[in-house]
Image 1 (spheres, rainbow over the protein chains, first blue to last red):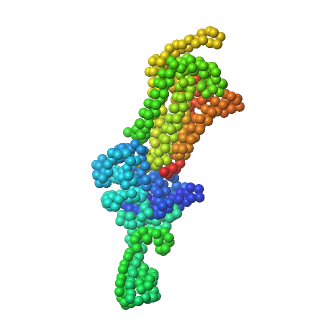
Image 2: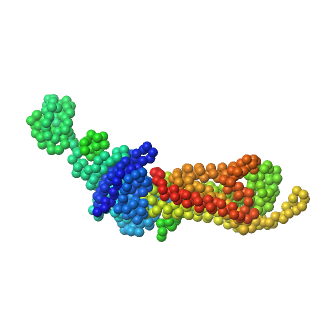
Image 3: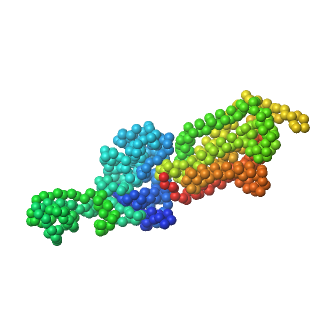
Length: 296
Length: 284
């Protein structure tokens, strides 16, 4: 089966600036792929190439098995830009009518359902709406035709927590219906609940790809042990899963990747009187990965 | 309904209010100019007879037009300056907005994320821009045709020449207004197309506005200065003002040179189309 998105050696340069460099992506149909990176890392440039707004300097790509420049292909793609800009006179309803008109399979019932779901007043000019409400308009535009492929640039930016939850539910429904989702974000925790796979881009290069399961295995547990008198860090030398030990007065802070049983047994042998645990969040992993602190 | 037609209609709809404003403003200018004719006919004659060659050129009087006659008055009061300048300003604004305007805000990018081709957007919007220019031009001409009889502009007048003989000057006709309006429209059309071309090639509205305006104003300055020094004569071919002012089509009727801006428009749109298809969109 053809991949929904396939890029081979995709490169975009502007003079000396290497915006995207030799990017190889393969997103199979039905997958939710999160493209993570810092601001300016090349995420949006990749999205803009996938939609034929800009042309690659070199490399090849296909979207839904065809060329992004083909309007018949783009008819099957829903797009949410990082910042939705529409003509000043356009209301939400105007936008839904206008952009829906180009897609002959636009579904009025789906559109009405999404408007109600996101609680949007579609009669107001879009440029007068708050950032969050403009985001809602963009989401409805992207989803209202039930596209086969969704390209979403920072989709939850500007949405409140309740709407973020609603968005994640919607994404899960579309994924269950077979849609492929390609989204960008710089917040790892945001995508952890929806993505099947994550690609990390930095300075235009894909530095790592992994499944969410692999990602979670990267998570470390921080355990702080309290003792009645100072204990040397070397007391945990050779203890399974312990990757680092810091001494802080009568406390020891352990970093553990993997099972914690051996560390807890050793703590009991040493007479620990207090224990506090803290799991590194996914954003910390993201930062560590980008900083090259976690080996691949 | 084709995508080109949908793009065309939407772009017109987005400019409904501004089109009405331009049209209303031009109607006021045209009718006010016509209304002053009975009172100012002799004043313009005095101004013309006492002015320098450069002043005559500025007023568009180099063709030896009698400013006291209805057609002479309409020429110096409306067609030599105000009407073409106003239509040019509108055209440059429309031409620079058609592609580059929305591109700068990101609105064009969103439109092109759907099943619409760049070709459909380019031609739909250019046709819409020209439609606005046509509507405003036609309404300005119509407002003059309707108001002329009320202000003696259709009446024949008799003027006394310096040698004491008298001469009859015809009143303005609908044909004069059509010829004058078409030629003023043509001047504006050429600069609209230049603004459109620069916008389609660069994606930058400021470049389109600046480039087309500089060409329009520069051409006018060149033409005016050429009346004082023949060394600039060769450069005036760049300017539509050369044939527009020299030929005075309001009075003398249309000639082939009015087709020049139409030819420029065809070339500009084709060049803009080719460039727009091949380039990256500017990010907002």
